[in-house]
Image (tube, rainbow, N blue to C red):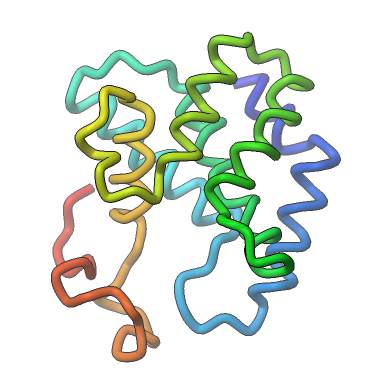
Length: 161
């Protein structure tokens, strides 16, 4: 996964990742750090294998590592994180040897991953990202679960992946 390693060492990725960690250092709710990205990537890849979806592992991991970087812009400027994450992803992906077609697929998945309709879309990567992002949350053991804005139905209470 050479290209994913390139993403993780890209200067813009590192800058945004570090800034996001700083902005969320006192956050009591789910943290959007690199550990979260790894969790999302692994869950999405497991889903991909279990459902025989045929998505390339490197695209899944790239998408997962880039999907929340726009939260920096959300915190600092009030912009939608999924839209900004897609814009940031475009710059990074181009520098990391992803084809134009791969960039389009990843950017679309990232830009749509917050929409509730995402699980019903034709974009397989979007469905994987949406579901894995939600499944990565360990709500049962969260110290902030009582203050969380997620409804009881949305909170992960059972082991799924």
